[in-house]
Amino acid sequence: MERFDRGGERRAEKKHEPPPAPAERVRRARNFGLSQLWAKRVRREVVSIITQNRLRPGPTNEQHLQNYAAKVWRILNRTRGMREGKREALLEATARPYAFEGGPKPEHLEAIRQGLLRFFHEAEVSGALDAEAQLGPGEDQPKGGFRVKPNTRAQREAWNKGREALLEQLWQEVRRMPEFAKVGAQRIGLWRQTARGLCSIVDHSARDSSACRRQVEELATDEHFSRLGRDPELVRRLAEVVIPRWEELRQSLEPHPLGNVRPPR
Image (cartoon, rainbow, N blue to C red; front, side, top):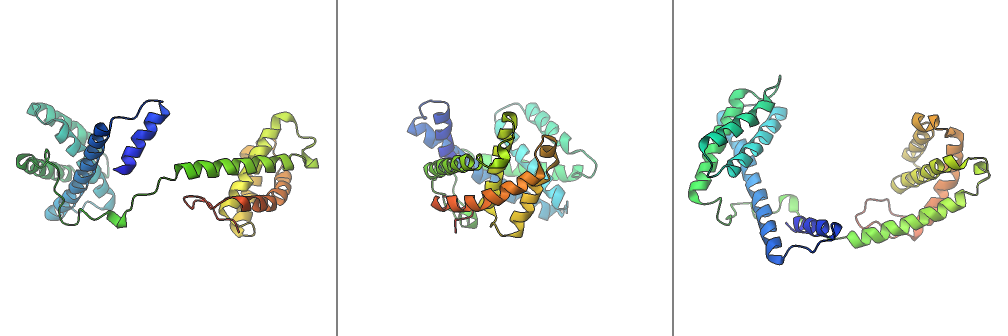
C-alpha cells in the first residue's frame, strides 16, 4: 500500500500536478489494499476448487485457471446491481480466449466459474465485500517476511549522477588514444557507446573473471556493430585501456543504494 501511494505521488510530480488530498490518498490506498487481499483469497479459493473437484489441470493450465478466475472475479465486482444478462454475457466472453488446443478443459472453466459465483454470493450476502476486511488466520503475516523497502530514490539519483560524471571523465581520456585519430565524427558516438558498454561489464563482473572476458569478446564480435564499421581489434584494444581505468575510477563511488552493482574493491 505504501509503494502504491508513492507511485501516485511520483505520477503527480511527473505531470507537475499537486498530489491528491490526504483523504483521497487514504481512500485509494485502502481500496488497493483490499483488492490485493481479495485477490489472494480468490487464488486460495481456486486451489480449493481444483482440489475438491479433482480437476488435475497440470501446472500450465492451473495458471490459466488462475488468470481466468481473476477475470471472473473482476466481472462479478463490476456487474453488481446490473441485470443478470449483462453479467452472463461478460462471463461467456471471458471464457472464449481459453478455448485453444491444449488449453483448460471447458468443464474445468465451468467448475471455476460456478465455484467463484458461490464464493462471491456468500461474501456479498455476508456484507464482507462492502465492510472493512477482517483478516483471517495467517493473512496478517507478510508473505515471505515482506518489509517495506526504504525510499532510495534520492540516493539512486545522486549515485547515477556521480557515475555519469566519471563516465564522461573516462571518455575524455580515452578519446585522446592515437587509434581514434582517424575515426570520423559520424562514428565517434559508436565508440563512446562501446566504452560505456565496457564499463557496464566491469560494474557486474570482475575484470579478471571469465565472465568479463566472454562479454568483451561478445561485444567485439557483435555482427550488428561490425556492419556499422566497428573494428573488433580496436574494441579489444579499447577494453585493455578502459577496463583497468574504470576499475580505478569507480573506487570513488559509494556502494549502489540497492546493491545492483558490484561494489568497488
